[in-house]
Image (cartoon, rainbow, N blue to C red; front, side, top):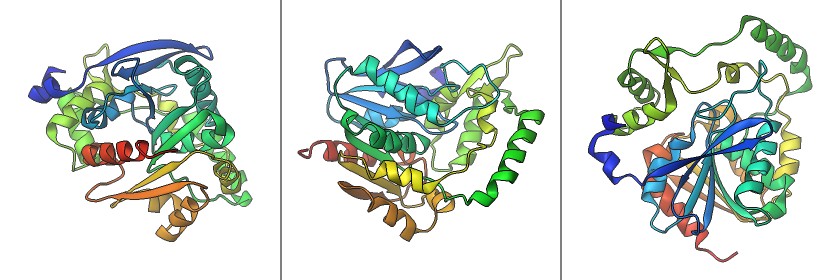
Length: 300
Protein backbone atom coordinates (compact mmCIF):
# COMPACT_ATOMS: atom_id res chain seq x y z
CA UNK A 1 0.00 0.00 0.00
CA UNK A 2 2.85 2.41 0.66
CA UNK A 3 3.75 2.16 -3.01
CA UNK A 4 0.75 4.27 -4.02
CA UNK A 5 2.30 7.31 -2.34
CA UNK A 6 0.59 10.42 -1.09
CA UNK A 7 -2.63 9.57 -2.93
CA UNK A 8 -3.39 6.89 -0.33
CA UNK A 9 -3.74 9.60 2.33
CA UNK A 10 -6.63 11.08 0.36
CA UNK A 11 -8.42 7.77 -0.12
CA UNK A 12 -11.51 6.93 1.88
CA UNK A 13 -10.61 4.01 4.14
CA UNK A 14 -12.25 0.65 3.52
CA UNK A 15 -12.77 -2.26 5.86
CA UNK A 16 -13.22 -5.97 5.26
CA UNK A 17 -16.11 -8.15 6.30
CA UNK A 18 -16.52 -11.87 5.71
CA UNK A 19 -19.77 -13.82 5.33
CA UNK A 20 -20.54 -17.49 4.85
CA UNK A 21 -22.36 -17.57 1.53
CA UNK A 22 -23.42 -20.93 0.09
CA UNK A 23 -20.46 -22.74 1.59
CA UNK A 24 -17.90 -20.08 0.66
CA UNK A 25 -16.13 -17.52 2.82
CA UNK A 26 -17.15 -14.35 0.99
CA UNK A 27 -15.22 -11.11 1.28
CA UNK A 28 -17.08 -7.80 1.32
CA UNK A 29 -15.23 -4.48 1.14
CA UNK A 30 -17.07 -1.63 2.83
CA UNK A 31 -16.70 2.14 2.89
CA UNK A 32 -18.58 4.78 4.86
CA UNK A 33 -20.81 4.75 7.94
CA UNK A 34 -23.18 1.76 8.23
CA UNK A 35 -26.09 4.10 8.96
CA UNK A 36 -25.68 5.93 5.62
CA UNK A 37 -27.73 4.99 2.53
CA UNK A 38 -26.55 1.69 1.08
CA UNK A 39 -24.94 1.21 -2.34
CA UNK A 40 -23.94 -2.29 -3.47
CA UNK A 41 -21.19 -2.24 -6.10
CA UNK A 42 -20.47 -5.31 -8.24
CA UNK A 43 -17.13 -5.70 -10.02
CA UNK A 44 -16.44 -7.26 -13.40
CA UNK A 45 -14.64 -10.32 -14.73
CA UNK A 46 -11.03 -10.67 -13.55
CA UNK A 47 -11.43 -7.71 -11.21
CA UNK A 48 -11.86 -7.15 -7.46
CA UNK A 49 -13.96 -5.00 -5.14
CA UNK A 50 -11.15 -2.48 -4.57
CA UNK A 51 -11.63 -1.48 -8.22
CA UNK A 52 -14.34 0.93 -7.03
CA UNK A 53 -12.01 2.88 -4.69
CA UNK A 54 -11.62 5.85 -7.03
CA UNK A 55 -15.38 6.25 -7.57
CA UNK A 56 -16.00 5.96 -3.82
CA UNK A 57 -13.38 8.66 -3.24
CA UNK A 58 -15.22 10.95 -5.66
CA UNK A 59 -18.69 10.57 -4.13
CA UNK A 60 -19.81 13.82 -2.50
CA UNK A 61 -22.44 12.44 -0.11
CA UNK A 62 -22.00 9.98 2.71
CA UNK A 63 -22.82 6.47 1.55
CA UNK A 64 -22.44 3.01 2.99
CA UNK A 65 -20.81 1.19 0.07
CA UNK A 66 -20.62 -2.61 0.08
CA UNK A 67 -18.66 -4.34 -2.69
CA UNK A 68 -18.17 -8.11 -2.68
CA UNK A 69 -15.30 -9.98 -4.26
CA UNK A 70 -17.19 -12.46 -6.41
CA UNK A 71 -16.57 -16.17 -5.81
CA UNK A 72 -13.06 -17.07 -6.90
CA UNK A 73 -11.82 -13.46 -6.93
CA UNK A 74 -9.86 -11.36 -4.47
CA UNK A 75 -10.24 -12.55 -0.88
CA UNK A 76 -13.34 -14.69 -1.48
CA UNK A 77 -12.97 -18.47 -1.51
CA UNK A 78 -12.55 -20.38 -4.72
CA UNK A 79 -15.03 -23.10 -5.58
CA UNK A 80 -14.09 -26.74 -5.16
CA UNK A 81 -14.68 -27.45 -8.84
CA UNK A 82 -12.96 -26.98 -12.18
CA UNK A 83 -15.20 -24.23 -13.62
CA UNK A 84 -17.69 -21.50 -12.70
CA UNK A 85 -21.37 -21.08 -13.59
CA UNK A 86 -22.89 -17.64 -14.20
CA UNK A 87 -26.21 -18.30 -12.35
CA UNK A 88 -24.20 -18.72 -9.14
CA UNK A 89 -23.51 -14.98 -9.17
CA UNK A 90 -27.25 -14.32 -9.04
CA UNK A 91 -27.74 -16.63 -6.09
CA UNK A 92 -24.65 -15.28 -4.31
CA UNK A 93 -25.96 -11.74 -4.74
CA UNK A 94 -29.30 -12.62 -3.19
CA UNK A 95 -27.64 -14.20 -0.15
CA UNK A 96 -25.39 -11.14 0.20
CA UNK A 97 -28.37 -8.78 0.02
CA UNK A 98 -30.20 -10.88 2.62
CA UNK A 99 -27.25 -10.23 4.92
CA UNK A 100 -26.60 -6.54 4.26
CA UNK A 101 -30.14 -5.30 3.58
CA UNK A 102 -32.68 -7.85 4.83
CA UNK A 103 -36.13 -7.09 3.51
CA UNK A 104 -35.19 -3.73 2.00
CA UNK A 105 -34.68 -2.96 -1.70
CA UNK A 106 -31.19 -1.83 -2.62
CA UNK A 107 -29.31 0.26 -5.15
CA UNK A 108 -27.07 -1.88 -7.35
CA UNK A 109 -24.10 -0.47 -9.26
CA UNK A 110 -22.39 -2.97 -11.53
CA UNK A 111 -19.47 -2.75 -13.93
CA UNK A 112 -19.12 -5.06 -16.95
CA UNK A 113 -19.87 -8.59 -15.72
CA UNK A 114 -21.18 -7.06 -12.50
CA UNK A 115 -23.53 -4.88 -14.55
CA UNK A 116 -24.80 -7.96 -16.36
CA UNK A 117 -25.38 -9.73 -13.05
CA UNK A 118 -27.23 -6.69 -11.67
CA UNK A 119 -29.45 -6.41 -14.77
CA UNK A 120 -30.46 -10.06 -14.77
CA UNK A 121 -30.99 -10.10 -11.00
CA UNK A 122 -33.18 -6.98 -11.14
CA UNK A 123 -35.43 -8.80 -13.61
CA UNK A 124 -35.50 -11.98 -11.57
CA UNK A 125 -36.18 -10.08 -8.31
CA UNK A 126 -37.71 -6.76 -9.41
CA UNK A 127 -38.98 -5.88 -5.92
CA UNK A 128 -35.48 -6.31 -4.46
CA UNK A 129 -33.82 -3.49 -6.44
CA UNK A 130 -34.77 0.18 -6.01
CA UNK A 131 -32.30 1.65 -8.52
CA UNK A 132 -29.69 0.22 -10.85
CA UNK A 133 -26.57 1.75 -12.39
CA UNK A 134 -25.17 -0.29 -15.28
CA UNK A 135 -21.59 0.61 -16.21
CA UNK A 136 -20.72 -1.09 -19.50
CA UNK A 137 -22.64 -4.30 -18.70
CA UNK A 138 -24.64 -4.59 -21.91
CA UNK A 139 -24.51 -8.31 -22.62
CA UNK A 140 -23.00 -10.42 -25.41
CA UNK A 141 -23.95 -11.40 -28.93
CA UNK A 142 -26.66 -14.00 -29.30
CA UNK A 143 -25.30 -17.52 -29.85
CA UNK A 144 -27.17 -19.71 -32.36
CA UNK A 145 -27.89 -23.30 -31.28
CA UNK A 146 -25.58 -24.63 -34.00
CA UNK A 147 -22.62 -23.46 -31.90
CA UNK A 148 -23.45 -25.89 -29.07
CA UNK A 149 -21.48 -29.00 -30.18
CA UNK A 150 -18.28 -27.05 -30.77
CA UNK A 151 -18.69 -25.08 -27.52
CA UNK A 152 -19.17 -28.23 -25.43
CA UNK A 153 -16.13 -29.81 -27.07
CA UNK A 154 -14.02 -26.72 -26.40
CA UNK A 155 -15.14 -26.67 -22.76
CA UNK A 156 -14.13 -30.32 -22.26
CA UNK A 157 -10.77 -29.71 -23.96
CA UNK A 158 -10.06 -26.69 -21.75
CA UNK A 159 -10.98 -28.66 -18.62
CA UNK A 160 -8.51 -31.36 -19.62
CA UNK A 161 -5.69 -28.91 -20.31
CA UNK A 162 -6.44 -26.64 -17.36
CA UNK A 163 -5.74 -22.94 -17.02
CA UNK A 164 -3.21 -20.88 -15.12
CA UNK A 165 -2.49 -17.29 -14.20
CA UNK A 166 0.74 -15.58 -15.15
CA UNK A 167 2.92 -14.53 -12.22
CA UNK A 168 4.99 -11.36 -11.84
CA UNK A 169 8.23 -10.48 -10.10
CA UNK A 170 6.93 -7.42 -8.23
CA UNK A 171 3.91 -5.21 -7.67
CA UNK A 172 5.50 -2.77 -10.10
CA UNK A 173 5.33 -5.44 -12.81
CA UNK A 174 1.67 -6.05 -12.00
CA UNK A 175 1.05 -2.30 -12.24
CA UNK A 176 2.80 -2.23 -15.61
CA UNK A 177 0.48 -4.98 -16.83
CA UNK A 178 -2.54 -2.96 -15.70
CA UNK A 179 -1.26 0.14 -17.49
CA UNK A 180 -0.62 -1.88 -20.63
CA UNK A 181 -4.25 -3.00 -20.56
CA UNK A 182 -5.43 0.56 -19.86
CA UNK A 183 -2.97 3.32 -20.89
CA UNK A 184 -5.19 5.94 -19.21
CA UNK A 185 -4.35 4.50 -15.80
CA UNK A 186 -1.89 6.63 -13.81
CA UNK A 187 1.10 5.05 -12.13
CA UNK A 188 -0.34 5.80 -8.68
CA UNK A 189 -3.69 4.22 -9.48
CA UNK A 190 -2.03 1.21 -11.09
CA UNK A 191 0.14 0.59 -8.03
CA UNK A 192 -2.88 0.83 -5.73
CA UNK A 193 -4.88 -1.61 -7.85
CA UNK A 194 -1.91 -3.97 -8.21
CA UNK A 195 -1.81 -4.46 -4.43
CA UNK A 196 -5.42 -5.74 -4.51
CA UNK A 197 -5.53 -7.31 -7.97
CA UNK A 198 -2.64 -9.67 -7.13
CA UNK A 199 -1.46 -11.79 -4.23
CA UNK A 200 2.07 -12.82 -3.17
CA UNK A 201 3.17 -16.41 -3.70
CA UNK A 202 5.40 -18.51 -1.44
CA UNK A 203 8.18 -17.95 -3.96
CA UNK A 204 8.05 -14.17 -3.48
CA UNK A 205 6.30 -13.46 -6.78
CA UNK A 206 2.80 -12.10 -7.42
CA UNK A 207 -0.11 -13.83 -9.10
CA UNK A 208 -3.47 -12.42 -10.16
CA UNK A 209 -6.06 -12.76 -7.36
CA UNK A 210 -8.45 -14.84 -9.41
CA UNK A 211 -9.06 -18.53 -9.85
CA UNK A 212 -7.58 -19.64 -13.23
CA UNK A 213 -10.78 -21.65 -13.73
CA UNK A 214 -12.56 -18.38 -14.56
CA UNK A 215 -10.74 -18.49 -17.90
CA UNK A 216 -12.40 -21.77 -18.90
CA UNK A 217 -14.98 -21.11 -21.62
CA UNK A 218 -18.64 -21.21 -20.59
CA UNK A 219 -20.21 -24.32 -22.13
CA UNK A 220 -23.69 -22.74 -22.00
CA UNK A 221 -24.41 -20.55 -25.01
CA UNK A 222 -25.43 -16.93 -24.50
CA UNK A 223 -29.15 -16.89 -25.22
CA UNK A 224 -30.12 -13.29 -25.75
CA UNK A 225 -33.87 -13.95 -25.73
CA UNK A 226 -33.61 -15.26 -22.15
CA UNK A 227 -31.56 -12.25 -21.06
CA UNK A 228 -34.01 -9.83 -22.65
CA UNK A 229 -36.92 -11.57 -20.93
CA UNK A 230 -35.22 -10.78 -17.60
CA UNK A 231 -34.42 -7.18 -18.56
CA UNK A 232 -38.05 -6.52 -19.56
CA UNK A 233 -39.14 -7.37 -16.01
CA UNK A 234 -36.90 -4.73 -14.38
CA UNK A 235 -39.21 -2.33 -12.55
CA UNK A 236 -36.71 0.16 -11.08
CA UNK A 237 -35.09 3.16 -12.78
CA UNK A 238 -31.87 2.25 -14.60
CA UNK A 239 -28.89 4.46 -15.42
CA UNK A 240 -27.20 2.96 -18.50
CA UNK A 241 -23.66 4.34 -18.75
CA UNK A 242 -21.46 3.82 -21.80
CA UNK A 243 -17.84 4.86 -22.23
CA UNK A 244 -16.97 6.91 -25.29
CA UNK A 245 -14.32 4.33 -26.26
CA UNK A 246 -16.41 1.36 -25.19
CA UNK A 247 -15.39 -2.25 -25.69
CA UNK A 248 -19.04 -3.31 -25.67
CA UNK A 249 -19.25 -2.97 -29.45
CA UNK A 250 -16.89 -5.95 -29.73
CA UNK A 251 -18.97 -8.08 -27.38
CA UNK A 252 -22.58 -7.11 -27.99
CA UNK A 253 -22.77 -5.58 -31.47
CA UNK A 254 -22.89 -2.12 -33.00
CA UNK A 255 -24.21 1.07 -31.43
CA UNK A 256 -27.66 0.53 -32.87
CA UNK A 257 -27.81 -2.82 -31.05
CA UNK A 258 -26.75 -1.26 -27.74
CA UNK A 259 -29.40 1.44 -28.15
CA UNK A 260 -32.03 -1.20 -28.92
CA UNK A 261 -31.14 -3.09 -25.77
CA UNK A 262 -31.41 0.04 -23.65
CA UNK A 263 -34.90 0.68 -25.03
CA UNK A 264 -36.05 -2.68 -23.65
CA UNK A 265 -36.00 -1.14 -20.19
CA UNK A 266 -39.13 0.53 -18.84
CA UNK A 267 -37.39 3.38 -17.01
CA UNK A 268 -33.94 4.10 -18.38
CA UNK A 269 -31.65 7.10 -18.48
CA UNK A 270 -28.62 6.83 -20.76
CA UNK A 271 -25.31 8.63 -20.36
CA UNK A 272 -21.95 8.60 -22.09
CA UNK A 273 -18.59 9.28 -20.43
CA UNK A 274 -16.13 11.12 -22.66
CA UNK A 275 -12.43 10.27 -22.81
CA UNK A 276 -12.97 6.89 -21.15
CA UNK A 277 -12.67 3.25 -22.10
CA UNK A 278 -14.31 0.13 -20.69
CA UNK A 279 -12.70 0.75 -17.27
CA UNK A 280 -14.49 4.09 -17.06
CA UNK A 281 -14.61 3.95 -13.26
CA UNK A 282 -10.80 4.14 -13.34
CA UNK A 283 -10.52 6.59 -16.24
CA UNK A 284 -13.14 9.15 -15.14
CA UNK A 285 -14.14 8.35 -11.55
CA UNK A 286 -15.35 11.89 -10.78
CA UNK A 287 -17.64 11.90 -13.80
CA UNK A 288 -18.96 8.43 -12.96
CA UNK A 289 -19.55 9.48 -9.34
CA UNK A 290 -21.33 12.63 -10.50
CA UNK A 291 -23.64 10.63 -12.79
CA UNK A 292 -24.41 8.16 -10.00
CA UNK A 293 -25.28 10.82 -7.41
CA UNK A 294 -27.36 12.87 -9.85
CA UNK A 295 -29.29 9.73 -10.80
CA UNK A 296 -29.81 8.73 -7.16
CA UNK A 297 -31.00 12.25 -6.37
CA UNK A 298 -33.96 11.95 -8.76
CA UNK A 299 -37.35 10.99 -7.28
CA UNK A 300 -38.44 7.40 -7.75
